[in-house]
Image (cartoon, rainbow, N blue to C red; front, side, top):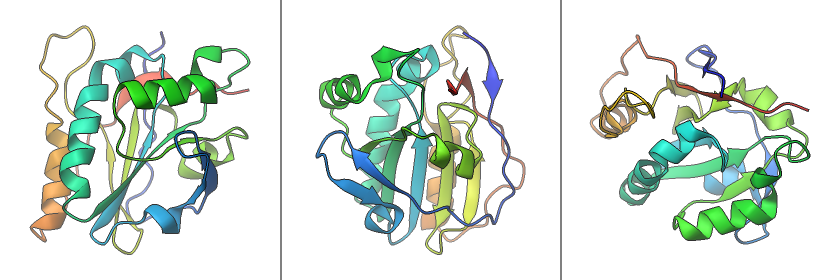
Length: 184
């Protein structure tokens, strides 16, 4: 397990479009289809990364809460499934069903979407406003698998709440830390 920080993509960056297959419904899903009225959260995750495993329940909890508040949510897996078969679409489906994902779980087979977003680790979070401009990128919270801090989703929840309350986002944002995306 390598500790890889997220790239701190410049705030204001426009969300790159995508059209990927949802492993849950088998439908093609585009950015426009999942875009929320208030904002859109793009999460790069996978099944096997200990950092994702550590926070998966909080991700689902946040999605369930904030989907009702006008946000769009989507998770994308861009890992090389030849070297990491536990991240295959079949295993993604099993994972999404087991943990009751309320959002699409997309497979980025070509890895072009991860490259377009500047994603570097799992988990990696990108929050866009209603105009699809980047307003938050970084960590879920300060918890890590080995540091014994509780998983709260504090940083991401704060960013989402600032949108709801029409407050400016904090300019200083902490990068996410996780496993590197498994590039081909």
